[in-house]
Image (cartoon, rainbow, N blue to C red):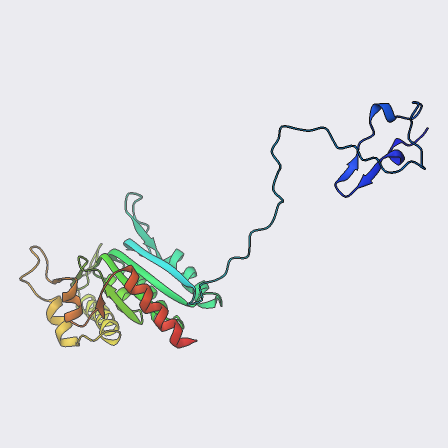
Length: 260
């Protein structure tokens, strides 16, 4: 049987179909010696399709690549919080911080805080990772950075607080069964010193002033401590400056530029 594909004629635009009147056996049938067929394919109503092309490769930010980390709600400890609580789980955040430190494409870390505080050991663990990340870090306290949120805020190389944001400084608390023995109070004191040492090491506030703010009994109705709003945290030496997201990013780009 004759192979009809051999009678097809090629041109730059593709294969030209063989018209019925040109089929073998017809009066004007194609032969191997015929010149290429010049008939165009039948017209269609479809608009011409643009040539497919890959989008140009996305260029990175010449000022540096920033990774964002949000710490919101309550910092969850070793006990799972109820599902109705907004929480930051340390088992989720720790791997993110490790990957940020290991990723060579990330130049700096921006920590966004809106937390009521939470577990002391979990908060200190995250604070230590931020403080020793090995890359430029900037923190920004938005709605609030209360309780253990204070060490998280001061752990960064440079810290900001929004003008309307607040920070509550108070002594540590303990939930659950408490043994009424001197050892319990000794443990309280040691844990309190861990928090105080971290805050004073990574900020400009003195230990004496920090303890005075923690033990202030005139501001909170059912507790002891101090509430600092915006610029007050800067005046006390806890936070470096008052600002917003743009200020925090610009400061982080500046720190990244110094590292390069």
